[in-house]
Image: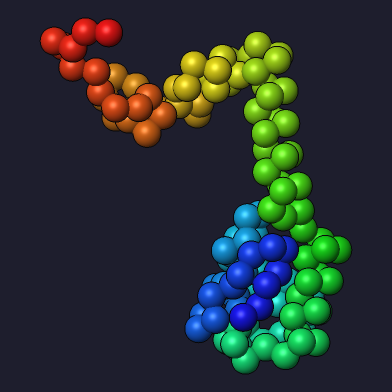
Amino acid sequence: MARISGVDLPRRKHIVYALPYIYGIGLTTAKRLCALAKVPENRKVEELTESDVKAIRDAIDANVKVEGDARRDVQANVKRLMDLGCFRGLRHRKGLPVNGQRTRTNARTRKGPRRGAGRRI
């Protein structure tokens, strides 16, 4: 099993579909990394040699922020918006949708479970 950036990649998937299991890597970035590392996209994770895994690790280290660094950047960006007091920061602070979605209905993921009419606090 290949372990890259602290994530165990699924063994039976093609490398291009296994790399997005790492936070900060999507499908497009995974294809670009495979091209940089000169690893065929249709090779499965269990078929990779140590040199292939090392080439992919080196390509990730040189080109992409992943896992802890990427999460830290996202959190810092959200905190900056909240500190500024801009509209998006206020929406983050209140736990409401940020990008203009409606909240009269839907938005349950951000707002949490419904509070019924007869329910007391």
